[in-house]
Image 1: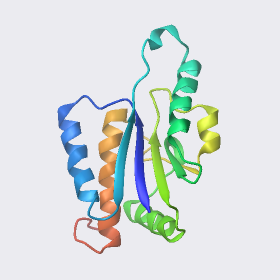
Image 2: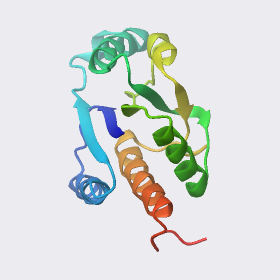
Image 3: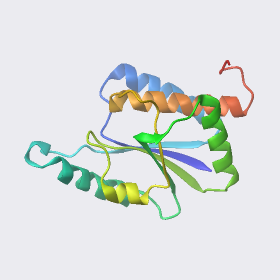
Length: 157
């Protein structure tokens, strides 16, 4: 299985970029991993939130393959402990999905079309984080999950 991390907009904070890169490089020892950045829309002041979500949906959906297992990072999604998330990933790998795609939407979330395409929703917390911070948190949790699965000493209970 390969994991893709699909995000809308680029990270501009150099500290967050460095942290995300650190965990992405660590992840490559466990699984094929790729981050795909969909450029932010331009001139969004002239369009409604709904229109912005639809335009982002066009870009997200065109990036996905029909066989992808798609999980949206969404505040209304299922929450996991770190161990629970590692078990979730293990189960997905056993189901032989060719590619699992985790998606972070734009500032207003996802359109209904993206929700309809998704295979599930995952919430990292009931708290709200900036989209740039979510990227670091998620990639670190992915790395943590693989160290748990391998029995490595990174995670402590």
